[in-house]
Length: 608
Image 1 (tube, rainbow, N blue to C red):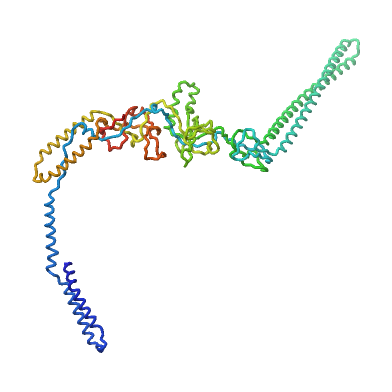
Image 2 (image 1 turned 60 degrees about the vertical axis):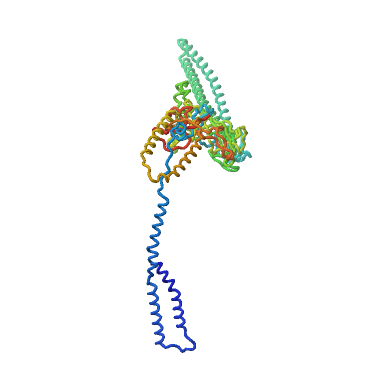
């Protein structure tokens, strides 16, 4: 219908254009004729409306021949053409497959090809077990020098600046010692005064002892006089006896006076001795304070910071200088508990030789373990320095509550010498020495007593499991039997099928399949069964990796890669005791689909 409408429109278009032209010409005013009146204009408008209505009715009137052509004839012709094409092409059928080849070589080739590598023991690689941990360089010894006396700083040495190297005994600062010198002089005079007073008392004691001896003789004489008067009492007067007795009492009184005086002098001397000793002690304190006015370096090292200057007044305890000992360095690192196990495990071999006292503290000690401290300059290839160190002890006792790791101490005895990336020993300068705050890698050189194996990193699967390849000729025999059984079933299926009328038309397709099979046979001629071993790929038990290992020199360098991209093959050191892996076992390193629980038959290429 749409096509008929378009045809009518195309036929009536010229007629419409002529009518419109006539209408426009009729509507134009003529110069020679007068203007028409109102009645004439209304008549012309009525005529134009009738002509437009007639044209619209003519457009809506369809043509029968065009409708039959586009709605009946053409669709029938398209259906007939489609049927003819389908009959000409015929029925499509799948290309028949050639019968399966059950020969041992073909069955071996049909097995999944895998790439394997042999597991070796760590001892056979000639390398040690290395545990790599991160650490931070800290000072081995740090001395914070504070003012021991109060006073004003009157002198500061030129070497007393941050970054300067000093030796033990070097003068750094001097505090005003005037007050302390006067105190020493005062106490010296006081001590001398006490000493002289002590000498005077000693002299008095000596004099009093002499008078005491005279008094004792006087008492003895008076006693003899009294005894004589008593014997002459019958012939003498009584007054003489009384006089003798009175003289004896006076002599005895004088003797007692001298004795009391000596006791008093001795007590005075003891007091003076205490005063003299106190003065001597105070004098020593004053002399020590006088010496403390001079600030010297207590150790060899480098000044980290200086916090006082000339004319500054400092109190006792004010920090002046911080000196770091650079003759040794220390690295603080944190170890996981599984890493700490291998450090402690190597020390169990000497546990039986320790004494009971040492055994009581063995849980708080670590065996001395050699370590290599490594620092690499970021952005500079080959700029690597290595120092020799020793893991000596815990850094405290206990586990860090935040990281759940154990802090340990590694001591570097000779930070002034290091080994560069080429293995040459070098002398460190300020740009290549161990500086506090450096982030370094610590490689602990362990000597475990347990057996360890080295597994390629490519062989380790999720869940810490590996695919173990076990060579087994029975796998090929079972595969051959399965192939023969499948061939028999395919032959029975082919015999049971009835021939169809289209078999002749499929001869060409069968010939093509035979050609393809012959090409496949030609390609399989490059397969050498002698180079392949049949076996079974199965999951191994869970392995327990300890640390990664890079074995240099075993990987063939790729000539298409730059030297900077040539890296050593990566391996994992694992426990052999807790898994079913041993030295000489083969593991699969190539990708595979899922492995059935019973294992996957496969073939592995023999390695020379």
